[in-house]
Length: 215
Image (cartoon, rainbow, N blue to C red; front, top):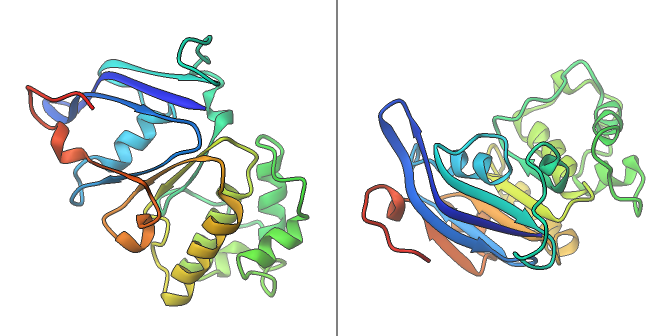
């Protein structure tokens, strides 16, 4: 799926998070959005997937080419999965119950069972344990499983290795290499360990003030 931003701008009260951002994210390509903490990287991701409305400009989504009929924002969430440290999980559920619940509104890969997915993120010994008893790193692993194994064309990764040790970083890189090929991937991060595989780097700080250059 292709994504096109045209003069996209977002502000909260009187503060502009980004302004006049025009960009084409092409199907199957990899992108990183960089910038200092609080610069608006997460907000841009939320606008790209239709979860947050732009203040000005447009974001449109299409299959194949930008000339095709644009998908509606009401259904666009079905085309995206996201892993982010601020996402909530249902802590009263076990990991198996949570993935099954998630699959009821966003299909997961048919190539793997839920147990196999949790094994891939190294939660095989905790899949029957309530998530409330997970460490922060374990919770991040289940968020990665939920995102990477969703059957969607676009994968959004917002600081995907938060709360990870080196083993977690290694796991993340392995998951991307094995299961993310062919999808549009957009990573929001300041850490090259998280976005080093991305072909295109976009610094959101380039879109803070007018006039802006188009890309």
